[in-house]
Image (tube, rainbow, N blue to C red; front, side, top):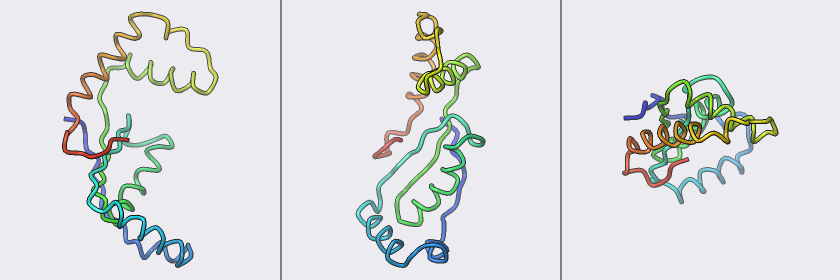
Length: 127
């Protein structure tokens, strides 16, 4: 099973201290349309990096809106995470010659398949 990050639920009213009533009411209204949705965010680390910093606040906010949101962390060996970092950097323009090697594809797909087998099929959406 993937590692599920333990988080609580935000108090939507605390956002009223920093944002307009109209915007908060709109967010709550939009949340009504998604109430009960089972949403799972997948990430490679529970801390560090922009995604982890965002999810630590975002998941509790989604839960406050009635969305059944979770955050799970994938597993992988050192080589897998080296490859994902290379892909991440390549998307930003850095060279990544390793991508051309059949062994790179094998490691990447093998680790992704192992993680995919651990996904809970009861979620409606994976991000």
